[in-house]
Image 1 (cartoon, rainbow, N blue to C red):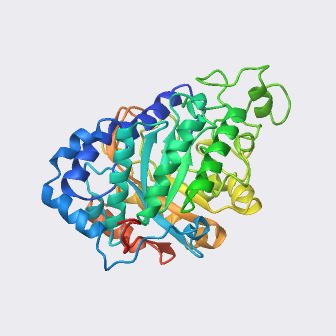
Image 2 (cartoon, rainbow, N blue to C red; image 1 turned 180 degrees about the vertical axis):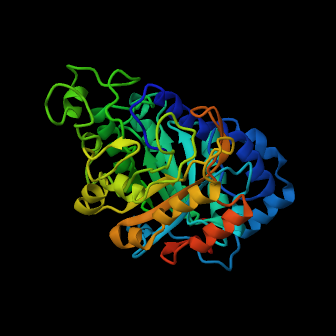
Image 3 (cartoon, one colour; image 1 turned 135 degrees about the vertical axis):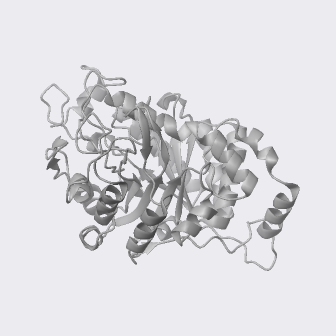
Length: 430
């Protein structure tokens, strides 16, 4: 998810980003299930689009999943999901435009991580869709990053809902697909109904983590706030009110107001026992607000934002903590970049797409990034080309659509990235 800025209009931009992940679920599902490729986003109504899947495709999938010559799948220990060196390469993909198998062919590798989103609690139909997504990952990926969004508020994260949830990653693990559960991401913003409620958030995350750890040994938990430029958003949607326990918890410097001088991450951290991975999404949205103008990323922007050292065209944000140093190093957690990409507006003029995107991926995948951040263990590319309400126009985030850019991107992928290989085992009980 892209970084937040301290502007009143940023709620519109952030809301559009949140809506993006839901609006594509139905067309994506149709493409995925009809063609038999990829990982579907999870949403209500997906099953209605699944009816186009042919009987022969279903039969083939069933034969592959029950091949008795294959060993029975065994859930990997969650600690083994962290590569000993390098980083997993993953994707958040517009599957309506490109199936996962086609993306893998373009990339020259199967992605090690595929991102799915689901409202939580979810329905029986969502559960079915989740299993279908897992079946696709068995063929064309390796691991699911399952993002749970408690859109009815944290009070809806009940013991019954959690107990129902745990059956699903355990079942998916039994199919040979590891799951990393990202619960209530970007909780330090203001744009989600679980935002700026650190006390209840920590408690809910811990309850989910305890259940996942106990019931799904092949699954792990990810805590993933938003990059905190513009924090603490006073007067915005879902902001904490003075005099409440949440406000007191967020006022980390105890001066009676919430500002960027307060720690935007620590009040939400559920503790080392609950957290297996930490994550921070970092996007290049351009040079200055309002967004939409094409701009080549500044040198070291990726590393500076990750470490709280950014002072550039977006403003001076050096009061932010060193996220990498605090959570990856001091807390000794593997770090994920759950989403990253660079903005290119085809209608805005200025620098070319290749120049902008190359400048960003050269930072993300540089030898300096690998050497400086050894705890960086996952990088997921945001592969979308769509209209963005926040810029009132189309933004092309992709790197595999244009042949010349795709060739340059794939040539730039370093040897320290790790990719998927599908699953060579048969589901437990088959």
